[in-house]
Image (cartoon, rainbow over all chains, first blue to last red; front, side, top):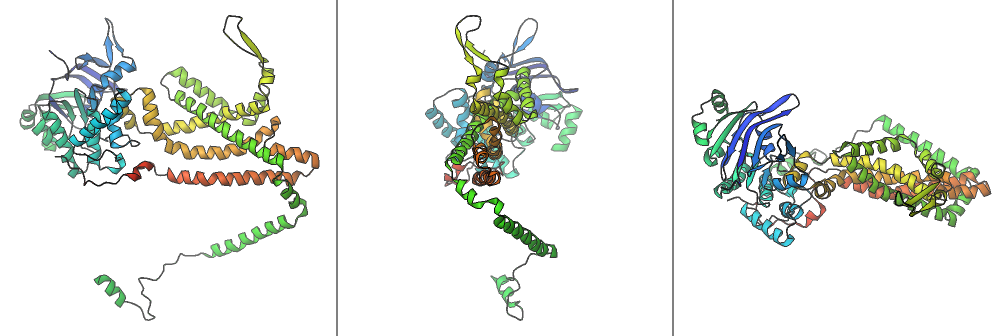
Length: 255
Length: 310
């Protein structure tokens, strides 16, 4: 069976100095699954997401992304960090969307989208430009290719950022609070793009405060608190009938 | 419209509209005193400079465009441009080394910076000029074989070469810090975005970090150019016939020390003024960097309405 688009985490631990931010996290995400991670701030949900893209390294545990050990290779005695080229290659298969969009301000929307294919995969420029236009159209921004990020609204920038990640043809897309930095009326347009992506069968892990999105689009949900995976299950089930008391307390506050 | 009408009606007895009267800035007594005192001091200095025969304005006029002075000026400009270009390139290398995760590389750049910023340029210049005392022969060849040639360092490093090496190595240290500061001004999110796309370190540097660091590097570099222009006068101690040394050579002959120093100073002043105009333009252009739209962007005309996601 193909392992593309799967994420497997077993007893992941991660500390920043004396503070343990991930405590023995287990997570199993199937191909095409949309998993939302919710929890109070500082619960480690962003850190977990960043580990899956190699922006943070884990201290111990097993992390397999697309069926491969991520960022490390295993020998009898230890895990050894991969050379940068290999790590970069693994990263190209995992797209990441940031809270602050992080578009390159010195490039146009189109150049941003072409950055991955052209600068990393050494793809043909003309083809990449054409693909970029298609991607822009698919996020509802046809004709905006020549705009610089500073000329776009937050919602538009975030959609360009999603298109930029999609240009690498990743099997997995990670979203780190993609709508938290947006004006309320711009949230919908970004969520619409994400919904569309979920429908197309993309494996997605979404850290979010949008309970509506979790309920409507997500297959599964993980509630984290203080570095622990507290509750995990079907998204609608957990949101309407949380089993754990900590989940109940959190949901009571946000819903 | 209604409002305008009501304002009109409210005009005062003498006919002027109170809403249109100018608002005047307050002028303190100190301001008037300052005008008078500073003007008097200025006039006094001007009169003294103009009437004091020891200034020898005729001599200044005579030597201002003297061939050897202009030659010196050219050499000064050459030294400024060459040492700035080379210094910036070396500085870029040092800045990249300094930001390296590999400790010995970062430490090497650190030692370089400490050394070259911690000793006076004048000392460094004299040091390079006398480098032959330390290493009389430079051998170029393949190690552990007899193939290669030995070069006489004294012949290799003449005054101009020594000046160029001295100014460049020193400038590189300062440029490295300016460039590194520029690198640090690039947001962490930008680096993470580049990483998440799988960019290599070199691509990230070339396409993401350097273009975004430029706005903070360029104005500071402009300042360095102006500083370097004046700093080149130090190489006169090596006997390099740049602007100051050219003036010195003349007054050594004619004993007209002050007029010739004024000639040199006027040229330095003139060139500095010429350089500071583009510098202030650059500073203005790059002052608000965060939401700066690249110049090319002006051509973009948005014809489509706000893009709408389905």
